[in-house]
Amino acid sequence: MSTNPSPRTSADPAGAPDEDVPDERRRRTILIAVCIALMAVVASVSGLNVAQPDLAVAYDASQSTVLWMINLYTLSLAALLLPLGAIGDRLGRKPMLLTGLSVFGVAGAVAGLAPSAEVMLAARLFSGAGAAMIMPITLAVITSTFPQEERGRAIGVWTGVAGGGGVLGMFLSAALVDVASWRWLFVLPIALVVVAFAMVLRSVPNSREKSGHDFDTVGALTSVVAVAGLIFVLQEGPVHGWTSPATLLSLVVGVCAAIGFVVWELRRGDAALLNVRLFGERGLAGGSITLLVVFGVQAGVFVVLFPFLQAVLGWSGLLSTLALMPMAVLMMAASGLAPRMAARVGPRKTMATGILLAGAGLALMAAIVSVDGGYLSVLPGMLAMGVGMGLSMTPSTEAITSALPRERQGVASALNDVTREFGTALGVALLGALLSSGYRSAIDSRLADVPQGPADTAREGVANALAAANEAGPDAEVLIRAARESFVDGWQHAMWAGVAVMAALLLYVLARGPQHPTHTPADEPEPVEVIAP
Image (cartoon, rainbow, N blue to C red; front, side, top):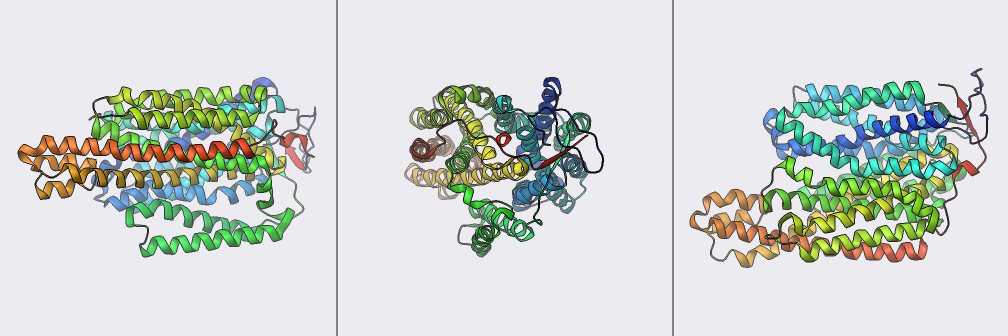
Protein backbone atom coordinates (compact mmCIF):
# COMPACT_ATOMS: atom_id res chain seq x y z
CA MET A 1 0.00 0.00 0.00
CA SER A 2 2.15 2.63 -1.21
CA THR A 3 1.33 6.24 -1.76
CA ASN A 4 3.38 9.13 -2.94
CA PRO A 5 4.26 12.17 -0.87
CA SER A 6 3.50 14.26 -3.95
CA PRO A 7 -0.05 15.56 -4.37
CA ARG A 8 -1.07 12.88 -6.89
CA THR A 9 -0.18 9.29 -7.57
CA SER A 10 0.03 7.34 -10.80
CA ALA A 11 -3.10 5.76 -12.12
CA ASP A 12 -3.72 2.08 -12.58
CA PRO A 13 -3.23 0.96 -16.20
CA ALA A 14 -6.61 -0.75 -16.04
CA GLY A 15 -8.23 2.62 -15.77
CA ALA A 16 -8.59 3.18 -12.02
CA PRO A 17 -8.63 6.90 -11.25
CA ASP A 18 -5.74 8.68 -9.63
CA GLU A 19 -5.93 8.81 -5.86
CA ASP A 20 -4.91 11.63 -3.59
CA VAL A 21 -2.59 10.93 -0.71
CA PRO A 22 -4.67 9.82 2.32
CA ASP A 23 -5.46 12.73 4.59
CA GLU A 24 -4.47 12.81 8.27
CA ARG A 25 -7.72 11.27 9.51
CA ARG A 26 -7.50 8.42 7.03
CA ARG A 27 -3.84 7.82 7.84
CA ARG A 28 -4.80 7.47 11.48
CA THR A 29 -7.45 4.90 10.52
CA ILE A 30 -4.91 3.03 8.38
CA LEU A 31 -2.46 2.92 11.30
CA ILE A 32 -5.14 1.57 13.64
CA ALA A 33 -6.18 -1.06 11.07
CA VAL A 34 -2.69 -2.44 10.49
CA CYS A 35 -1.88 -2.41 14.21
CA ILE A 36 -5.03 -4.41 14.97
CA ALA A 37 -4.01 -6.92 12.30
CA LEU A 38 -0.51 -7.06 13.76
CA MET A 39 -1.90 -7.56 17.26
CA ALA A 40 -3.81 -10.63 16.09
CA VAL A 41 -0.60 -12.15 14.72
CA VAL A 42 1.56 -11.30 17.74
CA ALA A 43 -1.01 -12.50 20.27
CA SER A 44 -1.13 -15.89 18.54
CA VAL A 45 2.62 -16.40 18.89
CA SER A 46 2.48 -16.77 22.66
CA GLY A 47 -1.19 -17.47 23.38
CA LEU A 48 -1.03 -21.28 23.38
CA ASN A 49 1.90 -21.29 25.81
CA VAL A 50 -0.50 -20.78 28.72
CA ALA A 51 -2.60 -23.80 27.69
CA GLN A 52 0.01 -26.55 27.30
CA PRO A 53 -1.43 -28.82 30.04
CA ASP A 54 -4.97 -28.37 28.65
CA LEU A 55 -3.86 -29.28 25.13
CA ALA A 56 -2.08 -32.41 26.38
CA VAL A 57 -5.25 -33.57 28.15
CA ALA A 58 -7.67 -32.61 25.37
CA TYR A 59 -5.78 -34.54 22.68
CA ASP A 60 -4.04 -37.13 24.86
CA ALA A 61 -0.87 -35.72 23.30
CA SER A 62 2.77 -35.95 24.30
CA GLN A 63 4.72 -32.89 25.35
CA SER A 64 6.56 -33.03 22.02
CA THR A 65 3.28 -32.86 20.09
CA VAL A 66 2.06 -29.97 22.22
CA LEU A 67 5.28 -28.06 21.57
CA TRP A 68 4.79 -28.62 17.84
CA MET A 69 1.32 -27.11 18.11
CA ILE A 70 3.01 -23.99 19.48
CA ASN A 71 6.19 -23.96 17.39
CA LEU A 72 4.71 -24.88 14.01
CA TYR A 73 3.02 -21.47 13.87
CA THR A 74 6.31 -19.65 14.46
CA LEU A 75 8.18 -21.91 12.05
CA SER A 76 5.81 -21.41 9.12
CA LEU A 77 5.53 -17.68 9.88
CA ALA A 78 9.29 -17.14 9.85
CA ALA A 79 9.95 -19.33 6.81
CA LEU A 80 7.35 -17.67 4.57
CA LEU A 81 7.90 -14.02 5.48
CA LEU A 82 10.39 -13.08 2.75
CA PRO A 83 8.69 -14.73 -0.25
CA LEU A 84 5.19 -13.64 0.76
CA GLY A 85 6.39 -10.11 1.47
CA ALA A 86 7.87 -9.97 -2.06
CA ILE A 87 4.71 -11.42 -3.60
CA GLY A 88 2.68 -8.77 -1.77
CA ASP A 89 4.85 -6.07 -3.37
CA ARG A 90 4.12 -7.48 -6.83
CA LEU A 91 0.47 -8.56 -6.65
CA GLY A 92 -0.79 -5.74 -4.46
CA ARG A 93 -0.40 -5.13 -0.75
CA LYS A 94 -4.06 -4.67 0.03
CA PRO A 95 -5.17 -7.96 -1.62
CA MET A 96 -2.32 -9.76 0.13
CA LEU A 97 -3.31 -8.29 3.49
CA LEU A 98 -6.97 -9.20 3.02
CA THR A 99 -6.03 -12.72 1.88
CA GLY A 100 -3.75 -13.14 4.87
CA LEU A 101 -6.47 -12.00 7.27
CA SER A 102 -8.91 -14.45 5.68
CA VAL A 103 -6.50 -17.40 5.86
CA PHE A 104 -5.48 -16.51 9.40
CA GLY A 105 -9.09 -16.11 10.59
CA VAL A 106 -10.33 -19.37 9.05
CA ALA A 107 -7.31 -21.31 10.35
CA GLY A 108 -7.88 -19.83 13.82
CA ALA A 109 -11.51 -20.94 13.78
CA VAL A 110 -10.48 -24.46 12.71
CA ALA A 111 -7.89 -24.58 15.49
CA GLY A 112 -10.45 -23.51 18.08
CA LEU A 113 -12.79 -26.31 16.97
CA ALA A 114 -10.10 -28.90 16.15
CA PRO A 115 -11.27 -32.41 17.11
CA SER A 116 -7.79 -33.97 16.95
CA ALA A 117 -4.13 -33.12 17.30
CA GLU A 118 -3.62 -33.62 13.56
CA VAL A 119 -6.27 -31.02 12.70
CA MET A 120 -4.77 -28.63 15.25
CA LEU A 121 -1.30 -29.02 13.72
CA ALA A 122 -2.63 -28.34 10.22
CA ALA A 123 -4.55 -25.31 11.45
CA ARG A 124 -1.46 -23.90 13.14
CA LEU A 125 0.55 -24.39 9.94
CA PHE A 126 -1.99 -22.39 7.93
CA SER A 127 -2.26 -19.79 10.69
CA GLY A 128 1.47 -19.20 10.34
CA ALA A 129 1.11 -18.87 6.57
CA GLY A 130 -1.67 -16.32 7.01
CA ALA A 131 0.42 -14.44 9.56
CA ALA A 132 3.32 -14.34 7.10
CA MET A 133 1.03 -12.58 4.61
CA ILE A 134 -0.13 -10.09 7.24
CA MET A 135 2.94 -9.15 9.23
CA PRO A 136 5.28 -7.69 6.56
CA ILE A 137 2.44 -5.95 4.76
CA THR A 138 1.33 -4.08 7.89
CA LEU A 139 4.72 -2.41 8.16
CA ALA A 140 5.01 -1.91 4.39
CA VAL A 141 1.67 -0.10 4.49
CA ILE A 142 3.08 2.36 7.04
CA THR A 143 6.41 2.97 5.32
CA SER A 144 4.72 3.46 1.96
CA THR A 145 1.75 5.56 3.04
CA PHE A 146 2.95 7.97 5.69
CA PRO A 147 4.90 11.07 4.66
CA GLN A 148 8.47 11.32 5.83
CA GLU A 149 7.77 13.63 8.76
CA GLU A 150 5.17 11.24 10.22
CA ARG A 151 6.70 7.90 9.32
CA GLY A 152 8.92 7.59 12.40
CA ARG A 153 6.02 8.10 14.80
CA ALA A 154 3.88 5.58 12.93
CA ILE A 155 6.69 3.01 12.96
CA GLY A 156 7.05 3.69 16.69
CA VAL A 157 3.42 2.72 17.23
CA TRP A 158 3.85 -0.40 15.09
CA THR A 159 7.00 -1.35 16.98
CA GLY A 160 5.30 -0.85 20.34
CA VAL A 161 2.48 -3.20 19.34
CA ALA A 162 4.96 -5.74 17.95
CA GLY A 163 7.11 -5.64 21.09
CA GLY A 164 4.52 -5.33 23.85
CA GLY A 165 1.52 -6.90 22.17
CA GLY A 166 2.73 -10.41 22.87
CA VAL A 167 2.63 -9.82 26.63
CA LEU A 168 -0.85 -8.31 26.41
CA GLY A 169 -2.01 -11.23 24.29
CA MET A 170 -0.53 -13.69 26.75
CA PHE A 171 -2.29 -11.99 29.65
CA LEU A 172 -5.67 -12.07 27.90
CA SER A 173 -5.05 -15.69 26.90
CA ALA A 174 -4.25 -16.65 30.50
CA ALA A 175 -7.43 -14.92 31.65
CA LEU A 176 -9.51 -16.81 29.08
CA VAL A 177 -7.98 -20.14 30.12
CA ASP A 178 -8.71 -19.38 33.78
CA VAL A 179 -12.33 -18.27 33.35
CA ALA A 180 -13.41 -20.32 30.33
CA SER A 181 -11.58 -22.88 28.17
CA TRP A 182 -8.40 -23.05 26.11
CA ARG A 183 -10.57 -23.12 22.98
CA TRP A 184 -11.55 -19.53 23.72
CA LEU A 185 -7.91 -18.52 23.13
CA PHE A 186 -8.71 -18.26 19.42
CA VAL A 187 -11.67 -15.93 19.91
CA LEU A 188 -9.48 -12.87 20.54
CA PRO A 189 -7.34 -13.19 17.36
CA ILE A 190 -10.43 -13.96 15.25
CA ALA A 191 -12.24 -10.91 16.63
CA LEU A 192 -9.20 -8.75 15.87
CA VAL A 193 -9.05 -10.18 12.34
CA VAL A 194 -12.71 -9.35 11.69
CA VAL A 195 -12.24 -5.75 12.82
CA ALA A 196 -8.99 -5.38 10.88
CA PHE A 197 -10.53 -6.86 7.72
CA ALA A 198 -13.39 -4.37 7.75
CA MET A 199 -11.05 -1.42 8.36
CA VAL A 200 -8.53 -2.52 5.73
CA LEU A 201 -11.27 -3.08 3.16
CA ARG A 202 -12.62 0.42 3.72
CA SER A 203 -9.54 2.53 4.41
CA VAL A 204 -6.31 1.06 3.05
CA PRO A 205 -5.41 1.97 -0.55
CA ASN A 206 -3.72 -0.59 -2.74
CA SER A 207 -0.31 -0.51 -4.37
CA ARG A 208 1.99 -2.89 -6.16
CA GLU A 209 5.52 -2.91 -7.48
CA LYS A 210 6.33 -2.19 -11.10
CA SER A 211 9.15 -4.60 -11.82
CA GLY A 212 10.99 -5.35 -15.01
CA HIS A 213 12.32 -8.62 -13.59
CA ASP A 214 10.76 -12.02 -13.16
CA PHE A 215 10.02 -13.21 -9.62
CA ASP A 216 13.06 -14.68 -7.87
CA THR A 217 11.65 -18.18 -7.39
CA VAL A 218 15.01 -19.77 -6.55
CA GLY A 219 15.74 -17.09 -3.97
CA ALA A 220 12.29 -17.52 -2.45
CA LEU A 221 12.61 -21.31 -2.16
CA THR A 222 16.13 -21.25 -0.75
CA SER A 223 15.10 -18.59 1.79
CA VAL A 224 12.21 -20.81 2.96
CA VAL A 225 14.50 -23.82 3.40
CA ALA A 226 17.22 -21.77 5.12
CA VAL A 227 14.92 -20.06 7.60
CA ALA A 228 12.90 -23.20 8.33
CA GLY A 229 16.04 -25.28 8.86
CA LEU A 230 17.75 -22.81 11.19
CA ILE A 231 14.61 -22.02 13.19
CA PHE A 232 13.99 -25.77 13.58
CA VAL A 233 17.49 -26.16 15.03
CA LEU A 234 16.87 -23.44 17.60
CA GLN A 235 13.46 -24.82 18.56
CA GLU A 236 14.33 -28.51 18.70
CA GLY A 237 17.95 -28.37 19.89
CA PRO A 238 17.08 -27.68 23.54
CA VAL A 239 14.37 -30.39 23.47
CA HIS A 240 16.05 -33.29 21.66
CA GLY A 241 19.70 -32.33 22.12
CA TRP A 242 22.06 -30.28 19.98
CA THR A 243 23.80 -33.41 18.69
CA SER A 244 20.71 -35.43 17.82
CA PRO A 245 20.49 -36.57 14.16
CA ALA A 246 17.41 -34.45 13.44
CA THR A 247 19.04 -31.32 14.87
CA LEU A 248 22.33 -31.83 13.01
CA LEU A 249 20.56 -32.62 9.72
CA SER A 250 18.44 -29.51 10.04
CA LEU A 251 21.53 -27.44 10.80
CA VAL A 252 23.33 -28.73 7.69
CA VAL A 253 20.29 -28.15 5.47
CA GLY A 254 19.70 -24.66 6.90
CA VAL A 255 23.32 -23.55 6.57
CA CYS A 256 23.69 -24.94 3.04
CA ALA A 257 20.43 -23.27 1.96
CA ALA A 258 21.54 -19.98 3.52
CA ILE A 259 24.85 -20.10 1.65
CA GLY A 260 23.02 -21.00 -1.55
CA PHE A 261 20.62 -18.09 -1.01
CA VAL A 262 23.45 -15.57 -0.59
CA VAL A 263 25.35 -16.86 -3.65
CA TRP A 264 22.24 -16.83 -5.81
CA GLU A 265 21.17 -13.35 -4.66
CA LEU A 266 24.62 -11.97 -5.45
CA ARG A 267 24.28 -13.34 -8.98
CA ARG A 268 20.79 -11.88 -9.43
CA GLY A 269 21.88 -8.33 -8.61
CA ASP A 270 18.98 -5.88 -8.92
CA ALA A 271 16.60 -8.73 -9.73
CA ALA A 272 17.29 -10.47 -6.41
CA LEU A 273 14.58 -11.16 -3.87
CA LEU A 274 16.85 -9.44 -1.32
CA ASN A 275 19.92 -7.50 -2.37
CA VAL A 276 22.38 -8.87 0.19
CA ARG A 277 24.96 -6.24 -0.78
CA LEU A 278 22.85 -3.72 1.15
CA PHE A 279 24.06 -5.33 4.39
CA GLY A 280 27.29 -3.42 3.82
CA GLU A 281 25.40 -0.23 4.71
CA ARG A 282 25.36 0.99 8.30
CA GLY A 283 21.60 1.30 8.53
CA LEU A 284 20.58 -2.16 7.38
CA ALA A 285 23.37 -4.00 9.17
CA GLY A 286 23.09 -2.01 12.40
CA GLY A 287 19.30 -2.20 12.52
CA SER A 288 19.24 -5.94 11.79
CA ILE A 289 21.89 -6.82 14.38
CA THR A 290 20.24 -4.63 17.01
CA LEU A 291 16.82 -6.20 16.49
CA LEU A 292 18.31 -9.69 16.48
CA VAL A 293 20.02 -9.14 19.84
CA VAL A 294 17.29 -7.09 21.52
CA PHE A 295 14.50 -9.50 20.66
CA GLY A 296 16.73 -12.42 21.58
CA VAL A 297 17.40 -10.96 25.01
CA GLN A 298 13.74 -10.07 25.49
CA ALA A 299 12.57 -13.59 24.63
CA GLY A 300 15.27 -15.13 26.82
CA VAL A 301 14.29 -12.93 29.76
CA PHE A 302 10.67 -14.02 29.43
CA VAL A 303 11.81 -17.65 29.48
CA VAL A 304 13.59 -16.91 32.77
CA LEU A 305 10.90 -14.70 34.30
CA PHE A 306 7.96 -17.07 33.98
CA PRO A 307 9.42 -19.95 36.00
CA PHE A 308 10.74 -17.44 38.54
CA LEU A 309 7.28 -15.97 39.07
CA GLN A 310 5.49 -19.32 39.00
CA ALA A 311 7.92 -21.83 40.52
CA VAL A 312 9.96 -19.59 42.82
CA LEU A 313 7.27 -17.14 43.92
CA GLY A 314 4.38 -19.59 43.52
CA TRP A 315 2.20 -17.28 41.42
CA SER A 316 -0.49 -18.39 38.99
CA GLY A 317 -0.04 -18.11 35.23
CA LEU A 318 -2.46 -15.18 35.08
CA LEU A 319 -0.74 -13.27 37.89
CA SER A 320 2.68 -14.01 36.40
CA THR A 321 1.60 -12.59 33.06
CA LEU A 322 0.14 -9.54 34.77
CA ALA A 323 3.49 -9.00 36.49
CA LEU A 324 5.10 -8.52 33.05
CA MET A 325 2.70 -5.76 32.06
CA PRO A 326 4.74 -2.84 33.52
CA MET A 327 7.65 -3.88 31.33
CA ALA A 328 5.42 -4.18 28.25
CA VAL A 329 3.70 -0.84 28.86
CA LEU A 330 7.00 1.00 29.22
CA MET A 331 8.32 -0.71 26.10
CA MET A 332 5.32 0.48 24.10
CA ALA A 333 5.59 4.02 25.51
CA ALA A 334 9.33 4.21 24.79
CA SER A 335 8.74 2.96 21.23
CA GLY A 336 6.50 5.97 20.68
CA LEU A 337 9.05 8.32 22.25
CA ALA A 338 12.01 7.00 20.23
CA PRO A 339 11.25 8.81 16.93
CA ARG A 340 11.25 12.22 18.65
CA MET A 341 14.48 11.39 20.43
CA ALA A 342 16.05 10.16 17.18
CA ALA A 343 15.03 13.38 15.43
CA ARG A 344 16.87 15.39 18.11
CA VAL A 345 20.02 13.40 18.80
CA GLY A 346 20.12 10.95 15.88
CA PRO A 347 19.25 7.26 15.54
CA ARG A 348 22.66 5.98 16.65
CA LYS A 349 22.56 7.78 20.01
CA THR A 350 18.93 6.75 20.51
CA MET A 351 19.74 3.10 19.82
CA ALA A 352 22.82 3.26 22.05
CA THR A 353 20.81 4.79 24.91
CA GLY A 354 18.22 2.06 24.63
CA ILE A 355 20.84 -0.69 24.56
CA LEU A 356 22.60 0.83 27.58
CA LEU A 357 19.34 0.96 29.56
CA ALA A 358 18.39 -2.59 28.59
CA GLY A 359 21.84 -3.85 29.61
CA ALA A 360 21.57 -1.96 32.91
CA GLY A 361 18.20 -3.63 33.49
CA LEU A 362 19.75 -7.06 32.96
CA ALA A 363 22.56 -6.18 35.37
CA LEU A 364 20.03 -5.06 38.00
CA MET A 365 18.11 -8.31 37.66
CA ALA A 366 21.33 -10.31 37.97
CA ALA A 367 22.65 -8.37 40.95
CA ILE A 368 19.65 -7.99 43.26
CA VAL A 369 17.39 -10.96 42.45
CA SER A 370 16.76 -13.30 45.36
CA VAL A 371 14.21 -15.82 46.57
CA ASP A 372 13.30 -13.71 49.58
CA GLY A 373 13.33 -10.43 47.65
CA GLY A 374 10.42 -11.59 45.52
CA TYR A 375 8.94 -9.53 42.71
CA LEU A 376 10.43 -6.26 43.92
CA SER A 377 13.93 -7.64 43.41
CA VAL A 378 13.32 -7.94 39.65
CA LEU A 379 10.91 -5.06 39.00
CA PRO A 380 13.52 -2.24 38.66
CA GLY A 381 15.46 -4.27 36.11
CA MET A 382 12.28 -5.08 34.18
CA LEU A 383 11.34 -1.40 34.00
CA ALA A 384 14.79 -0.38 32.74
CA MET A 385 14.67 -3.14 30.15
CA GLY A 386 11.24 -2.06 28.95
CA VAL A 387 12.37 1.51 28.32
CA GLY A 388 15.66 0.41 26.77
CA MET A 389 14.12 -2.05 24.35
CA GLY A 390 11.48 0.44 23.24
CA LEU A 391 14.11 3.10 22.50
CA SER A 392 16.29 0.71 20.51
CA MET A 393 13.64 -1.13 18.48
CA THR A 394 11.96 1.76 16.66
CA PRO A 395 15.08 3.35 15.08
CA SER A 396 16.35 -0.14 14.23
CA THR A 397 13.14 -0.96 12.37
CA GLU A 398 13.21 2.39 10.56
CA ALA A 399 16.85 1.82 9.59
CA ILE A 400 15.94 -1.53 8.00
CA THR A 401 12.89 -0.31 6.08
CA SER A 402 14.73 2.82 4.92
CA ALA A 403 17.56 0.77 3.42
CA LEU A 404 15.36 -0.71 0.68
CA PRO A 405 13.55 1.27 -2.02
CA ARG A 406 9.91 2.09 -1.66
CA GLU A 407 8.68 -0.52 -4.11
CA ARG A 408 10.40 -3.26 -2.07
CA GLN A 409 8.87 -2.38 1.29
CA GLY A 410 7.19 -5.76 1.59
CA VAL A 411 10.63 -7.38 1.43
CA ALA A 412 12.11 -4.79 3.80
CA SER A 413 9.34 -5.37 6.31
CA ALA A 414 9.69 -9.14 5.96
CA LEU A 415 13.42 -8.86 6.63
CA ASN A 416 12.64 -6.89 9.77
CA ASP A 417 10.22 -9.62 10.88
CA VAL A 418 12.55 -12.51 10.04
CA THR A 419 15.27 -10.84 12.11
CA ARG A 420 12.88 -10.59 15.06
CA GLU A 421 11.86 -14.24 14.76
CA PHE A 422 15.47 -15.41 14.56
CA GLY A 423 16.37 -13.30 17.57
CA THR A 424 13.47 -14.69 19.56
CA ALA A 425 14.34 -18.31 18.77
CA LEU A 426 18.04 -17.70 19.45
CA GLY A 427 17.40 -15.97 22.78
CA VAL A 428 15.05 -18.69 24.02
CA ALA A 429 17.53 -21.41 23.07
CA LEU A 430 20.69 -19.81 24.44
CA LEU A 431 19.49 -18.06 27.60
CA GLY A 432 17.25 -21.02 28.37
CA ALA A 433 20.26 -23.34 28.06
CA LEU A 434 22.37 -21.09 30.32
CA LEU A 435 19.60 -21.05 32.91
CA SER A 436 19.32 -24.84 32.85
CA SER A 437 23.07 -25.46 33.09
CA GLY A 438 23.45 -22.91 35.88
CA TYR A 439 20.60 -24.51 37.78
CA ARG A 440 22.01 -28.03 37.47
CA SER A 441 25.50 -27.02 38.55
CA ALA A 442 24.17 -25.09 41.55
CA ILE A 443 21.71 -27.63 42.91
CA ASP A 444 24.07 -30.60 43.34
CA SER A 445 25.79 -29.16 46.40
CA ARG A 446 22.40 -28.43 48.02
CA LEU A 447 20.99 -31.97 47.73
CA ALA A 448 23.39 -33.87 50.00
CA ASP A 449 20.70 -34.66 52.60
CA VAL A 450 17.83 -35.29 50.17
CA PRO A 451 16.86 -38.89 49.18
CA GLN A 452 18.24 -39.97 45.83
CA GLY A 453 14.89 -40.35 44.00
CA PRO A 454 13.55 -36.85 44.67
CA ALA A 455 17.07 -35.42 44.27
CA ASP A 456 17.44 -36.92 40.79
CA THR A 457 14.05 -35.50 39.79
CA ALA A 458 14.97 -32.09 41.21
CA ARG A 459 18.06 -31.91 38.98
CA GLU A 460 15.80 -31.82 35.90
CA GLY A 461 14.39 -28.38 36.73
CA VAL A 462 12.74 -26.25 39.36
CA ALA A 463 9.21 -27.32 38.39
CA ASN A 464 10.26 -30.98 38.65
CA ALA A 465 11.76 -30.27 42.06
CA LEU A 466 8.52 -28.79 43.37
CA ALA A 467 6.61 -31.82 42.10
CA ALA A 468 9.15 -34.19 43.71
CA ALA A 469 8.82 -32.45 47.09
CA ASN A 470 5.74 -34.56 47.82
CA GLU A 471 7.98 -37.65 47.86
CA ALA A 472 10.76 -36.12 49.92
CA GLY A 473 9.01 -36.47 53.28
CA PRO A 474 10.65 -34.37 55.98
CA ASP A 475 13.21 -33.11 53.46
CA ALA A 476 10.55 -31.42 51.33
CA GLU A 477 11.28 -27.91 52.58
CA VAL A 478 15.02 -28.40 52.07
CA LEU A 479 14.38 -29.62 48.52
CA ILE A 480 12.10 -26.70 47.66
CA ARG A 481 14.52 -24.15 49.08
CA ALA A 482 17.46 -25.75 47.25
CA ALA A 483 15.59 -25.71 43.95
CA ARG A 484 14.51 -22.09 44.28
CA GLU A 485 17.96 -20.85 45.29
CA SER A 486 19.57 -22.87 42.49
CA PHE A 487 17.14 -21.38 40.01
CA VAL A 488 18.23 -17.91 41.12
CA ASP A 489 21.86 -18.95 40.57
CA GLY A 490 20.99 -20.13 37.05
CA TRP A 491 19.05 -16.90 36.52
CA GLN A 492 22.16 -14.89 37.36
CA HIS A 493 24.27 -16.87 34.88
CA ALA A 494 21.76 -16.12 32.14
CA MET A 495 21.40 -12.44 33.03
CA TRP A 496 25.15 -11.77 33.17
CA ALA A 497 25.51 -13.45 29.79
CA GLY A 498 22.82 -11.10 28.51
CA VAL A 499 24.74 -8.14 29.93
CA ALA A 500 27.85 -9.22 28.05
CA VAL A 501 25.91 -9.54 24.79
CA MET A 502 24.33 -6.12 25.24
CA ALA A 503 27.74 -4.58 25.99
CA ALA A 504 29.11 -6.00 22.74
CA LEU A 505 26.06 -4.68 20.88
CA LEU A 506 26.54 -1.22 22.42
CA LEU A 507 30.14 -1.07 21.19
CA TYR A 508 29.04 -2.17 17.72
CA VAL A 509 26.27 0.43 17.48
CA LEU A 510 28.56 3.20 18.71
CA ALA A 511 31.06 2.24 16.01
CA ARG A 512 28.77 1.21 13.14
CA GLY A 513 25.26 2.42 13.92
CA PRO A 514 23.43 4.82 11.58
CA GLN A 515 24.94 8.26 12.13
CA HIS A 516 22.26 10.50 10.70
CA PRO A 517 18.48 10.45 10.36
CA THR A 518 17.73 7.49 8.15
CA HIS A 519 17.33 7.86 4.42
CA THR A 520 13.69 7.16 3.65
CA PRO A 521 12.17 5.25 0.75
CA ALA A 522 10.05 8.31 -0.05
CA ASP A 523 13.20 10.06 -1.30
CA GLU A 524 13.67 7.53 -4.09
CA PRO A 525 12.04 7.33 -7.53
CA GLU A 526 8.54 5.91 -7.43
CA PRO A 527 8.35 2.78 -9.65
CA VAL A 528 5.15 1.76 -7.91
CA GLU A 529 1.64 1.98 -9.22
CA VAL A 530 -0.99 3.04 -6.72
CA ILE A 531 -4.53 1.99 -7.39
CA ALA A 532 -7.75 2.90 -5.72
CA PRO A 533 -9.22 0.68 -3.00
